[in-house]
Every structure is written in C-alpha cells, then in structure tokens.
Image 1 (cartoon, rainbow, N blue to C red):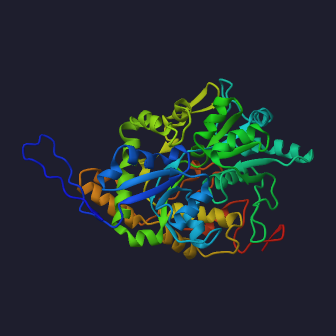
Image 2: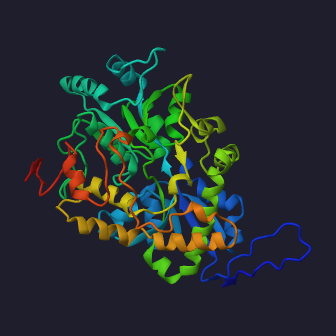
Image 3: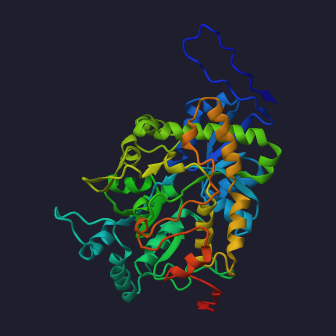
Length: 455
C-alpha cells in the first residue's frame, strides 16, 4: 500500500508547486491493456509524462492481440483496466457475448475513425459523387454513391464484403449508420444468427485493426471502418481511399472508453480515482494550446511498444488534417479530440446511443423501455467518479474549474440534425423515439424471426 505525501515547499520557492492528493491507494502496481490505435494516446501520455507516477501508481502497458483478448483480460483480472471499445462495457454488462459488469469513469476521445474503400471500388463510386469547383470530390460522401456499385456486384453474384473491428465496436455501428443513411441494408443479428448478415446488402465481418489494409489489399474485403492510423495507412500504401471520417458522419461522436471491472472499482476506489486523475491530465495535455503537444504525442505513439506506425502516417490525422487521396489533404482539426467539448466526461447519452444501435441491428433482440436504456447507461458510465477525480485535480492546481461540466445530469444537449449525415437528430433522453426516426433498423415491437423482421 502506498500513501501519497504532500510536497513540502520551501517558502523561498519562486514557483508554487501543487500538493499531491492524500489518496490512500489500495493497489499501486497495475497492468493496463490497449490495442494499437492512436486513440490509446491518453494511456501512453499518462505513462510517458509521469502522470501515473505522480499518483503513486506503477503502471505497465501491454498491447493486446484483439478486442476479445483484451476484454477477457479485464474480466479475468490479468489486466486491471484497458482502452476499450465503448460498446464493450455495455455489451458485457447486459450479457451480450461475455457477461461481466464493466464500468467506465473516463471517456478516452471523440471522433478518430474513418471508412476506407479499395481503389477499385473508389473508381466505381466516383461517377456518383458530386465534384467541387476544383474537381475534387465533394465531402461528406454519402453511401448512396456506393449503392449502385453494391447492386452491380449483387447482379454478378459477388458478395460485397466490408470489415469492421468487433461486433460491438463503434466502427461496426458507424459503418452500419453510413450504409443505412445511403439506403443500403447492413444486416441484422438475432439470438440464433450472430453473423449480423441477415438481410444484408453489404456483408460486414470482423478484422483486427492493424490487419485491415492487408486484408483489403488481398481482396478479402472491399473496404472497412477502422480507427487511425489504418485509414491513412491505406493512402500511404496506395491501396485505398478513405471516403468519410466519423467527424463528418456524426460531429464529435464518442469513441473509446477506459474500462475496468465494477469489482475492481469497488475494491480499489482510491486507486480508480488516481487512475482517472492521471488520464484526465493526459487528455488535457493532448489538446492544450491548440494541439501544440500533438507532434510530441505522435512521436510517442509511433514507437513500437505503442502503435508502431510511421510518424508521418500517425501525424496525418493527429495534427489537424486528414488525407483522402494522395495530395488531397483537408483540414479536420477535430478529427482527434481528447479533452475539448467535455470529451473525457462519461455521458449517459453516449452510452444510450450505443445501446440504441445494438437494438437497431438486433443485438438487443427484444424491445426495451426508455427507462431500461437510461438505467443500463447508469450501471456502466460513472460520471460521479470522473467529477471526483476532476475536483481533486482542480484543488491541486492541475486543472481548470471551468473545464468540467459540474452541473451536468449526465446528458448532452441533443445532437442537431445538421451534425449527422442522415439529417436525423439524436436525443439520448428519448431512445425509442430516436429509433422510430431511423428509416432502416428495428423499432418499436419489431424482432427478427428467421430471416425476417416481424412486428
């Protein structure tokens, strides 16, 4: 057990140093898991900048082979916590897949993903895409430009395959959202058929993030949705073209979370607070001074123990712009957001969006009340832990009071229609009304029976 002592400051000090918190740590040696993606940055920065050490924590970071291995590690106790898909704690808690009560006190980022297609598919889409005055494609690009291509493949009897990283990943739901907004059926799940391909125009399957470019290059998939740097990698390798970022799909959408078991948090409340403090500091550093620290962050992430991609590939998205085709770089300053817009606060409304998508595509097979969505979100997302950690940082002079939503009830203001590609607003307080507003997907009392929607 390690106790953090306050720093004794001499009265002659020219600079006032913050006093460390009096947190009595229940456990000070921790192992956290991550997947090799740029949005694991808060963990790497908290480690490299000494924020974990400042809290008296001795942390080991371990890359994991895939999302299932990572989740199993947290459930089994080999990992004390991890960089997780936001859908993972929710799915585990409601018993979709592996059942376990996982919580999150910290949202790791906003945005950060893209959808990429192969060069061949891009050439077939281009005639369907409006052009700007300079001849470049008009963004955002709708999946309606892909629909005639999919129809042509269907006529030829060729399955149209695309990749996403995990059944409960943001990437699965974003790819489905984009396809459905363009009039394409991305398929349904049922308790009897967990392929997610029931009634699908486009067949989605799992590919681990670092393997996406090679899998597309081999022709196994025609495109994919993934986090960085694996969209920019396709551009650098000359094998594919990103057609849309998730910032263009849904402005400032939630992405990864830091997940740990409810049991760990209950047994180690001060340790959980200390970890959350270190991660908040890392997020602040990543965004402060108009992203001035991003080049340093890119250098850290490019190391083999973290993401291990070339500096230039990671910098392409982390430093305020995004390259769609060779030479077609466009400013997207908020492609990666780690602290701005309350990015680190675990909003219930973010959790509810994931749950609505699980229901929309049949992973939640039966209809649920609005109250169920809200209570499930509250079981997993823990803003009270987050705000307690933030208060300690403010008291220590390590964060600004004005940067945190102290009076929030856990719900963001509704996302306006103009910020989402299909022009349909999202209000987390009314999940079933939201589902009703989406033209494609399960709603109301509907269920999947065999290969059909009934109800």
